[in-house]
Length: 411
Ligand SMILES: *Cc1c(COP(=O)(O)O)cnc(C)c1O
Image 1 (cartoon, helix red, strand yellow):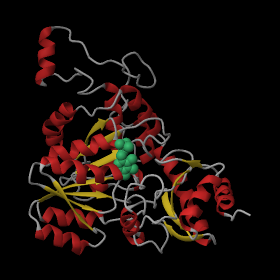
Image 2 (cartoon, protein in one colour; image 1 turned 120 degrees about the vertical axis):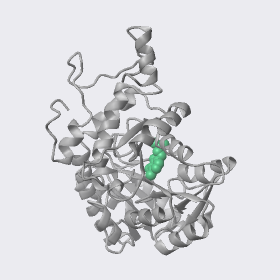
Image 3 (cartoon, protein in one colour; image 1 turned 180 degrees about the vertical axis):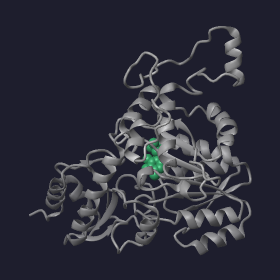
């Protein structure tokens, strides 16, 4: 920030200003530093930069000014209003990645070794599930899956298996919007000496801050609400332990090469400035859409954690500012009704992903979760008639009108 003595008291002001440094050539916005390397005045300076004696950029896989602004902005938002055990404002270190999956895989690889296990919930982002269950076993690391909505089941798993070294949380989770209690579970994991990581993609730091609890790492797919406009793929890994992040984490990040690029970082910085405004509108619309669907005769069930009927309602009230913009609903007519509804949409967009300005709908049984065997889908709550929705920022009457006509029976 231009004047380092001024600390914004509002999240929105912080989202706009945090991480920005005056450009040496006086550009208003940080330019896109499209440069793979950075030069040294002399060989001695190169030596000092390599040894860490002098701060400065060297090579863009290791860091770039366009990444730094994005990293500092996200770190400031995730730490907003939180104090460390000494009572000082919490400081976090962020590493910007090429995708959410790059951040997740880097975080898991830097914390685990052969013989270790990861405890997690059964409802997870598909790529994360794939990495845990199909890739990590080749390195001698495996996953223990439990229904983490029940803390007793989490305790039983931790007690039974001392090889569990990391608790991996994602809340709210895809596509059933299941929620787990971050405070309770991270406290429990700490009793057993585990590292705790939380994927905060669906909530964003405006709605939920896992670092308020005993969480060590937070991950985002910045592709979603943080970018907010669907213009780039990206991810971020944030850590509480500055020393670990600057040494071991940074070394592994540099070696694995999951870094972002200056253009995507620029788009992300631009998008994040409006996070507060966007989330307010997204959430306001989502609540109304959930109520509308809940009353609709074609709809059998609505999964939205802002509805009292949702099992995660109480946890949501405890750990989130608003219930978010993601919901899903089941149609009475099953698979056929699901496909018909998708095909009849006129304004809302048929696509996967989430967190863009426009309202997005997808049909998990025929799209994102088609490869999951039907009995398992049923068990996870991904029924054939389930439709997932990322509620956008259009004017509410337009969203409701489009849904209403798409849900009305075809004559
Ligand atoms: C999209 C997503 C990811 C993966 O992020 P990419 O940017 O696509 O690699 C991880 N977790 C959640 C919750 C997601 O929605």
